Length: 200
Image (cartoon, rainbow, N blue to C red; front, top):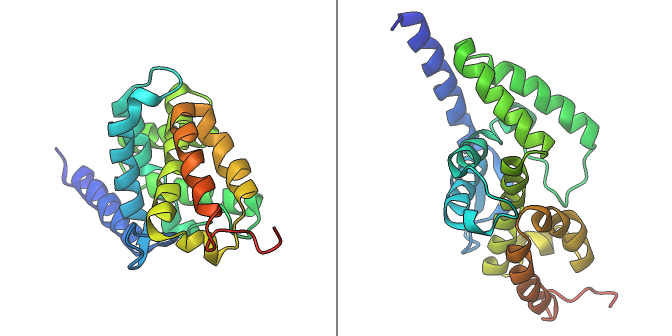
């Protein structure tokens, strides 16, 4: 194994450490602080491991976990774009593509190329593995909000209708039983004083 190959692998891994500094809108379940994107990536990989049986169609759990471990690496350069935030999706996509070029390009081509392709597959959300991975990516922040008293939902003035449109549609596509389970819990939260829409 050449020194050059090892250097490129370490360059990639050391750069990936920066994901620990990218803060997300979602908090930890106890609401103590905002989670970072590395924590999120680990947690949804664990979600996939535990919940693969609920996928709409059979999935390769190992591939799903690999997707989820790398899917947010581009946030090192592009930053996090909260689903309920205000940003231009086209500009964000362009920043993420440039980030993918740089980050996966740090690796030897025989590793960087397949990982980049896996990231692209996740983004396209057409394969069974990617559809489920995208679904689970949306589930974890919902559960965090339910556990933390709706911390980021309150911060972003999120409505039940927005959650259904922006989250529910994606989760239902890949894990409908999971979304059916969560809908009742979300409705219960919005029925409380904390979650009730001011104009309702």
